[in-house]
Length: 127
Image 1 (tube, one colour):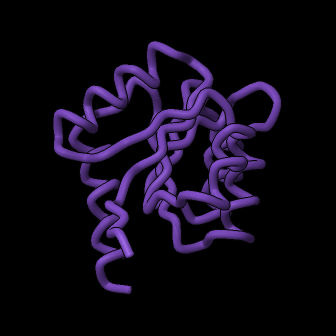
Image 2: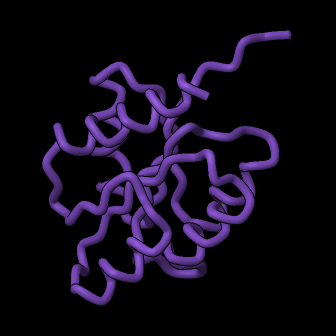
């Protein structure tokens, strides 16, 4: 049986943000795949699961909040790093109910993002 290498999903409807995040992750040695919508990401889960998701909250079709709820029910072992450009105390409180690894505001600190993904990876290695 072939070994499946761990990877990170980047889910954001803004193409320049997806590109920048992929470039950052890959330059840090992290395998990553990008998804333009929560719908596309959730549709991919039956065949391939990441160990971590970098998830934008504000997206058309299905919001990041809906993706969070779906992951919490179907794949709680997947770590989630929430990112948003539309911060408020209410949005942060709502996101934190799902217990993400981190809640980051755009533009985010690259090292904090990499550290949060590293936390997800270490949790996967412990299980």
